[in-house]
Length: 183
Length: 291
Image (cartoon, rainbow over all chains, first blue to last red; front, side):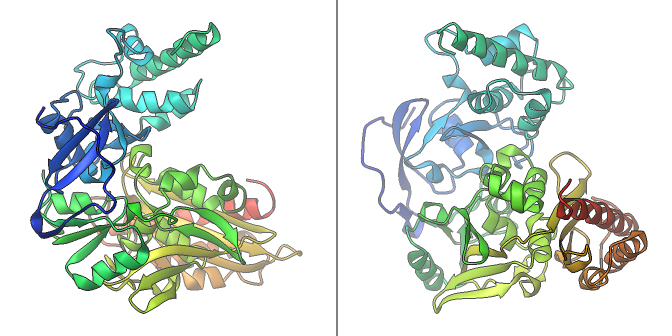
């Protein structure tokens, strides 16, 4: 990780005139990160190559497949189609943030239990879309789940077990919430 | 793929953004949601020397009724359209269209302003704006001007927006009683651009006759198309089977599709007629209080 983590005030007017690098301050998986980057750096490259967070995959690189899905201020987006400079002052969550203190998130557990993957390439993106959906909709219908992962392509599974996994994760989170646990 | 190099500016006001566009006259592009521009840059189909990112300009993201209009700010995300109760209630055509734009990940960033002024005939909102008789508010060096949707689309990727102007707002005449609207497209793959799409907004009078009808078409010509004769053919009529069939036929005749990877032109033309009819039926059902 070449980017140092120290606090600075957000850039009042972020510019990079004359081909110079831009300095961004972004919170990635809860950690403040400051970095000097070329404005053309895509978020997915910033995450993988500057921060070493290779859980976010590059699939089609043409905004279609969703393998690069991350959460930007809580919303699922395709990080191959976002400039890293656009995330200045904002919060990014990647698949690496799902596991906390060695404990998998309900979405991760459910993908394992329901076998919601085969080759696993689309899985980080699928789980990030699922995480965004379940944060907003506690007990989604199958139609809502299918709609939420419309931007995430899986070429192995036929989606059936992915949908089951997301349903199961939703139920886990609800019962955890019901018993005073924390999802 | 990595985009070519560019200088990046993130202004905090429309005036500042316009001043940048003036300063880099013709060399700068506006970055909104980026979901058309960034892919085009990766493919080197666009190589702007300067990007003016309007996402940090406050006050450009809103959906509200005001002074006889529905006003939508340029950086309103297309998912915001989908989540708006006001639109679902009074402008369902925009809820329909938002649901059919790409996928939720794209819609979380893609903007209304970008969809409207990118000028791709496959974008879904232009046909809706034509059907709704919307107007585009453009901010430029001489201040703001308003361009009706019907004269906004010049050619593929060419709109009335000058290189030193920014689309800041879309204005749609406020919904009336007995107004119904709908949008639908067919796509080759989930989340793809339309093979053909149709947008309808119509108003009935108290006797059930059509007072006005706008029909817009997606993906079947060099720009989104306003099927003027088709819409006008319904005005003053009780919209029965023969009038609706005739209007759909006229809509089909207004198309100028090209054969491409999304389908042969004969198919696109035929589907424009089919979709115009389906969407007319749905808009009518909504105008009558159903659907």
